[in-house]
Length: 109
Picture 1 (cartoon, helix red, strand yellow):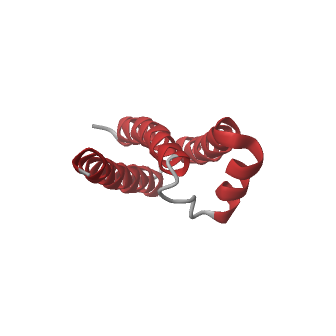
Picture 2 (tube, rainbow, N blue to C red):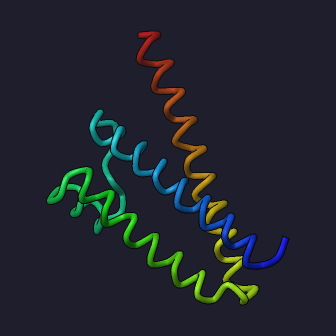
Picture 3 (cartoon, one colour):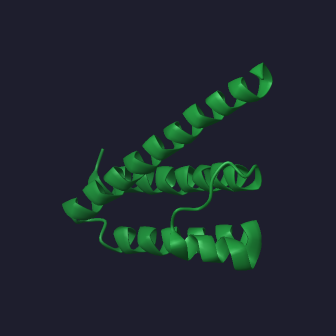
């Protein structure tokens, strides 16, 4: 797979994983299990609600993806996009694990 094709796949993963991260984060906040740890995004959540939070999160992600795509011939951009996608995949995995524990605790007790 060529560099630009790898980056395209990484960007698609990055966008998808960020949407999942937003969904899980909103669930945890709504259920009062946790708060947003990023102070800037926490303020956005407080003042704009979940949809403003989503808009800000995705705007920042898409700007980053655009920057990566503009440099798609660079090996660094391809590796950076792949690494970021992997990091968010792991974060979503943590969310899924926490959700399973939450459900087990919720239904067991």
